[in-house]
Amino acid sequence: MSDLLADDSEWADVVPIRQYENVNPIAPIFYSEEYKDATDYFRGVVKTGEMSPRVLKLTERVIRMNPAHYTAWQHRYKTVMALQVSLEDELELMDEIATMFLKTYQVWHHRRLILTALNSVDAAARELVFLKTVLENDSKNYHTWSYRQWILVHFNDEERLWAGERPYVEELLEEDVRNNSAWHHRFFVVFSSGVRAGDEDREQTLRRELSFAKEKIALAPNNLSAWNYLRGALEHTHTPFTTVTAFVEPYTASEPPATDVVDLDNPLPSAGAQLPCVAALEFLADIYEEEGGEKTAKAVEIWKLLANEKDTMRKKYWEHRIRDALQKA
Image (tube, rainbow, N blue to C red; front, side):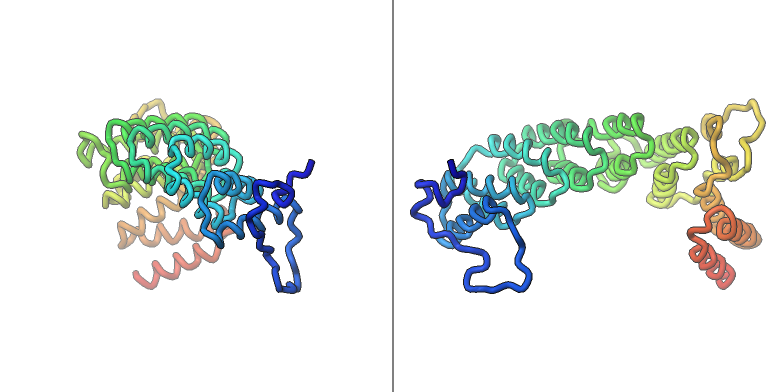
């Protein structure tokens, strides 16, 4: 039995419109017969402006074959709203489709439209739970993280939505300390959102975040994500880099310092760490440059070491830093 709409009596009243009608393309795209059939009828219902239950089925059919078909998504949304379809049911269907097509932007845009129409914190909280399951399969999916951050800001509910974000990110970083997406989300939650420090003042928040970043750096010294977080926390709060000099210096040595002294504020590199750490050398050079004066020469020496030995892939960049610093000096 044929699965084509052209052979289905339900669609007999629709005039299909071919993509290349009255056109002779030089390099036509060879779609499957099923896809050509579905999109021909889709163009037919768009032309007439039809919005009906069968159009919902048709748009789903097209989307499952081509999840990036933005016109199908747009017409589906208009049809959902016109028919007053259950938006909760639409989200449930989208759970399946989003799981199949995680990296397709249109999937997440449609969810955003549906959630905006629902305008419900309960629905938003449900979405955060769903996104956790999605991120278990792809913890670094840009569209998923972007959608999660939009939910937090759009609904902006401290107790139902924001409260669990920092603990959730800590769980992810316990699983994979190099998850750059999780580090980025933590920065968003703590700093970039501009709203989520709870009852903590700025100084308490900074101390906590510096301590967290230092602990993770000690665990995996060559994890650039943690170093970037440390740098970002200082820059965002306009805190001088010199405040972390004592922490950074041991990571620039060839071997961990031989000492029995435990400094909880400045944890040492973990056993077996590969030293010196390139990110630490860069950080220390920035500290020297920030101090200026005679310390600029020390920064230049580090940049030369990076350019010629430790980070030759960025040789041109380090040479630029050297020239720039000497010109300023």
